Image 1 (tube, rainbow, N blue to C red):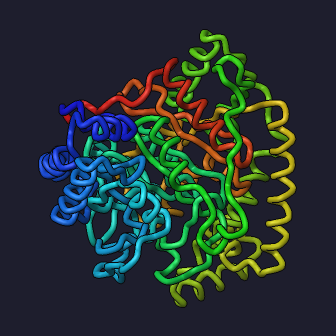
Image 2: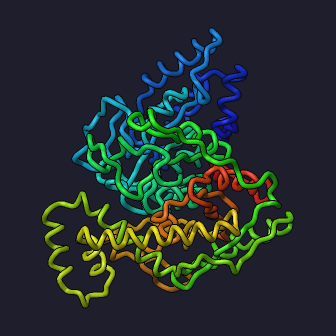
Image 3: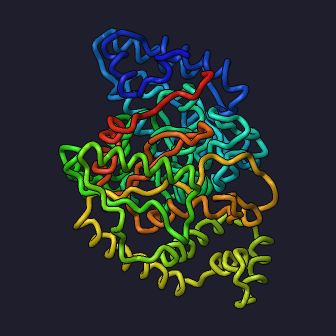
Length: 483
């Protein structure tokens, strides 16, 4: 194991600033590791070493002159293949985009580049970033470094696998239904889903290249090997886009507490509507016990005034039309036929009806969303943090059979719908809340478990700060064996 490759991006940036290592030296470490280890992980799917070497050389030349490119000066990183990256193939896992090389960066990518990051390649995703696993017809399957027979999750699966395997310094993910949080939990790294709208999403695929509007629910956010990395990256990423910056600036509130034991914490670790596997639940319970031993008061009975089934139903009604926007005509026609049977209460039947919501029906779901947002605001008057599972299970074995509606997962020996994988993430997505995923331990089978730290709308700094303080109690990122 090369310890430098596994250090947080914040530390790598300090090492470059203090000239303990050059950007070129650090880049070569990562390129060598990609060559050595990525054959088995398959996380980095597009790489441009020569362009990266030119960026790193420029960073070192400026460093020698005492000039700074920004807080990520010279730090090599990869970018999830859903974000357009100038001069680098960007496919979103779709064969129709296998030769797509953008001329411009996505807004979030440009902000990282402007902060001095050396962008060296792209990481794998599922088709159109729409699965809880990461595989596609162009690049194949990404494996979890903790167990190659399992997935690192999706859609930011390549991103977290690269971080866990020590192949990159930092990553940029996207999340509409847990695509940052579930992979972070399954690979044992940190991820942050920002409050909706604070990081520009333009330049992500989907929607198709060139679309200027931003879809509901979707966010861009950082992934790293420490909460400090999330804090630094969010500071770089957050803020209005060019069209809005003339009128407003974003100033996120400071963390709600200055000491871990001053946080008012609630824990919602299990729910009948979203069953959690015992191995995961036990690990989360141990993290809560560790917090109590550190002097933190944790209320395990507090709940928002929203039943989980109501939250899930509203989430799916808002999510499904976004997903269905890119479906071909023949698929939409098949769904239209299914939707005519109002008595069909199967998962597919409900999906068909949700995909074809009228604008009036969508407005009704949106009104419920905002009513739920008010209830969450009331909840966070009494609590600063809500701890929840990031997902119901640890990393699952690869399963590329049938459709996602057909697939099943096993929770406590019982078969459950594959869609349960996004439930614990989805109930916070549609109400725009920030959520940080932090590693808190491993199952008896040595698979990572992450906890979801949810906070009030626009108080992203609170959830990240809590994750940073939590790491001092439960431990933080640990490299998988063999890397």
